[in-house]
Amino acid sequence: MIHVPGHFGEFLQGRIGPSGPVALISVPCPALGVRGQTAPRAGLNLHGGLLTPALARQMLARLNLRPRGYFALHPLAEPGCGTGVSTASLVALALLAGWRGHPQDLAAACIDVEGASDPLMFVRPDRMLWASRQGRCLASLPPVPRFEMIGGLWGAPRRTIATDSDFPDIADLVHAWRGTSDLAGFATLASESAARTLALRGPSGDLTAELARRAGALGYCIAHTGAARGLIFAPGCVPAGAAQMLRDAGLRGVIQFRGGSA
Image 1 (cartoon, rainbow, N blue to C red):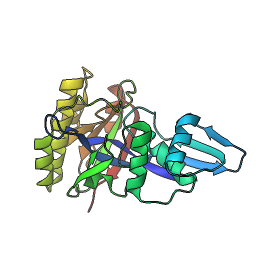
Image 2: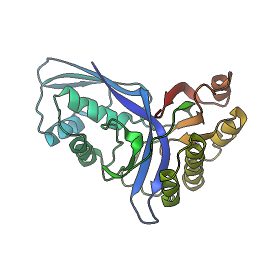
Image 3: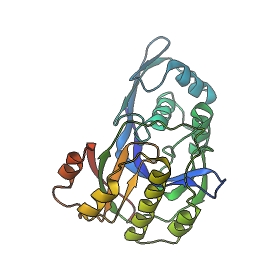
């Protein structure tokens, strides 16, 4: 049994300059992702519905892996909600099939197969400005201080389309991010990135900013192409009743977790 951790939306996502690449800063969430296991069996057999046999064979061939057996992949969140299920499933398949190479090579394979990738094959994806359609790190980033997040899924799943580059310019936010050291500053930048994407792409009626205000959060983040919505707090500062408030607002799959660096 293996577990490939997922993420819970992004702190930032957008284009680096008006015609630059789409890039993001991921919010790691070890409680999510994909679990996988394998057992001997003739041929290539998949279970879990995350990957088609054709996609799995393409990924394995790209990595020069030719295993035979039973592969079961179990997502820990709904696919298409901005938690990295698609990338995590490809990474899990590769690891179960015996791949032990460099994370950058695995990222390149994910790009070749799906056209977009989250940086889930790396140990600290939140320390990378990640070009998600190119599968490469554009810059190293400062650590985000310890934080606590509570959130859930709002609205229908929205799968990432690799050719979609209709995102706001966030070059100024990235510049500010690289010069920030306090959690409140990072949370403010994440909120601005979310607001720009919602203004440009929708969906309309998003309540995340209002929920953050009501809960006294430092800020909020979203999955910029998914349903994940999260409120950012200092550790130990999530108010009692926050989970119920989110459920009452229509969020499902409410989750609370901690992240960041000391």
